[in-house]
Length: 280
Image 1: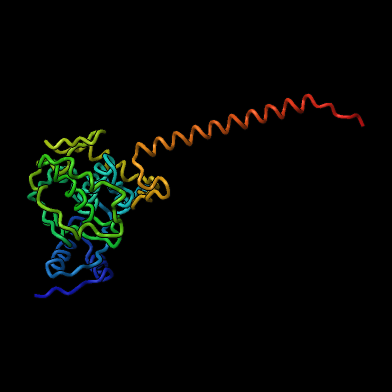
Image 2 (image 1 turned 180 degrees about the vertical axis):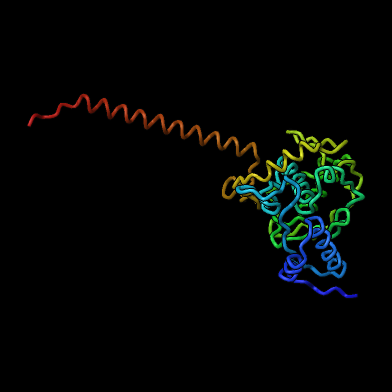
């Protein structure tokens, strides 16, 4: 039986016409998404509200899952590494509706991912038009950087966190993620302030609560991405050491100029005091 593409309005109307518990509505929507995905059809699914998990209960001033994904840092070490893990957690608990215990016990065997598709424990991970809000991109972004930790190749993910080579308008979920992450023990590991990943076991339920609470708070920050401007002129091919030395020379020249101006002002002030003005 061939699946027909359903519009966002059609899906929303169906869910409204047949009200049910949140979990039932999630199941219905996941089946519809899965049928369309198997047929190679992308659809714009509506968001479900009324999430039963208090972590994502709608409250004034707090972000919803896609808004929380949008403000996450994905580049620079170690903040980008932590941001990508937290994005994966947001997808599990906010987009797919997993409980905290369900999220922390997700294993590589629970995940199916290839370009244009991702599902976790049978739940299809939806895509979004904007890459920064895309749950599928968030899953791919995390699996790409966590993989090297399980193959003792920890330094190989650093280029993936380089903001100068990032291409934000492009969907990362269309790229091949590879299979290294399948060797992982915990897909939600702890990450300390130095960026060291504890790959032995997942973060606790309490830590998940803390992370989601932090990520739902609006920060107003926007990650700056893109290539650095290449130096021009005499310093175009200079090394870092040469640039630092040149900066020191400029600072020394500025100090000399300031001292010269101070001497001029002092002489002008002294000259003014010694000047005898004719009486009118």
